[in-house]
Length: 303
Image 1 (cartoon, rainbow, N blue to C red):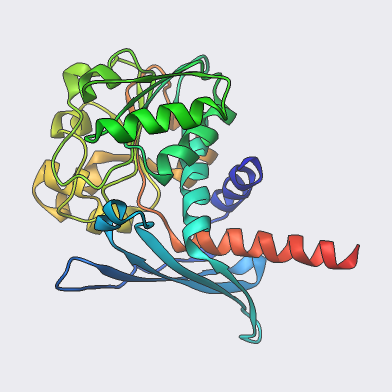
Image 2 (image 1 turned 120 degrees about the horizontal axis):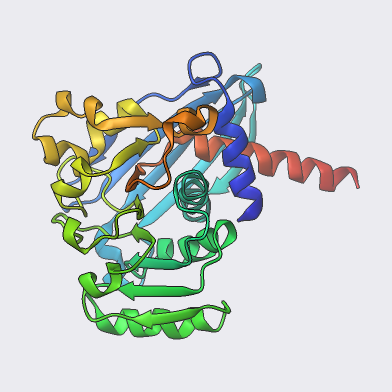
């Protein structure tokens, strides 16, 4: 995870206009609610391009299966040669949390030590690990709609982290007094409301990644400094933002900056404000991870 955070930091320092091609991802929606997404990208300084093909079945949680499954293919951008294929589920789990950790490091108060996790799936596990690497987390408040999952998560993660984890009876209980909040669900309706939140809280809104799904009440959007991973993706896919204003064309004025701007323009950031990072996930993140793994494999082969 620490390596992936560094990879994401290096990636988002690149010039998005000159160095990156990241088209809006096409997706096929099945009658049963399943989604097949295709995410291509090109990173000029790394000399690679690639694609992630991933299926998303939110109902898989009830079957004991991952909701995200697929594969990432990395190609040499000079000759089109296939270099490497990776399991998309594992990469997505790690890089998503790594990007949240990067933005938490940029936006959250330096001494923030209370973390709230809304959701108990794979992303909750990786976000607990990632956020703990960038802030001195001492207390974690956990809630999901399934109390049994919360109890299991708290028990299992307590064995892996020297941090106090607490099961909460409601989302409000989990959010109150938290300095960092991560929403990690597949909810189509708001789970978190503005009066529950501390004034200087930082929120990573990760779970809702389609125009009709959201985890946050609209008042949170209007009361926060909003950052996104990509303007185009946010305007087309971020239900938390789109539903707050009721029109895709009105999303842009809500956004204070993207990851690249937050990294390269510190004047955009005020850690005393309530801040929100709306995460959608980008193909460039997957391809940057694949490139890093390709380099790492090459170094191992030489030794």
